[in-house]
Image (tube, rainbow, N blue to C red):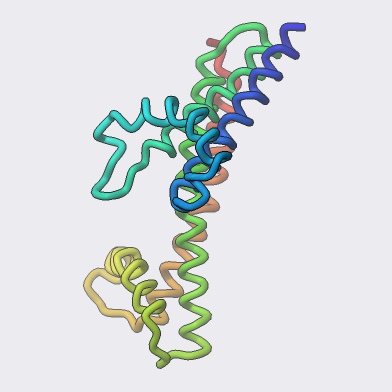
Length: 196
């Protein structure tokens, strides 16, 4: 009975988290946001999301990361509740594993986006090296800080051709993602076995 109650609560929190994600996405589409379903969703989600917006550290420049933190908190709670239902008590290890999962999900998303952007740029470089487009210029501006850091770390002041630097950065990023992924899996296992 208690187990099913915790699983139900976890499912409801996951559903609310999905509604919050939809609400955040609708904020980028004012015409849908101002519709009747958009207003209902805003009344349901905004009190929770606004609680996190009040913290100034959640904003970096014009980018507001408070929805990411708010949804991350919901995800941790949704992951911890089934563990409580199974064991009958709350464990520091389960909480740490939930926090680790949320942080890794966020960080992994950005690493995968970087890998996709690097691979896309490499394919374009191989197919059409001298083509010009505002999109590729914007993508290069996004990628160049990462490419520069990786190249300078491995080459110690030597300049690499752009394609070589692109391949090196892509390889380092993929390898980093793989190592971090298995590190997170190992840490999660360690956290779940903590006795407290």
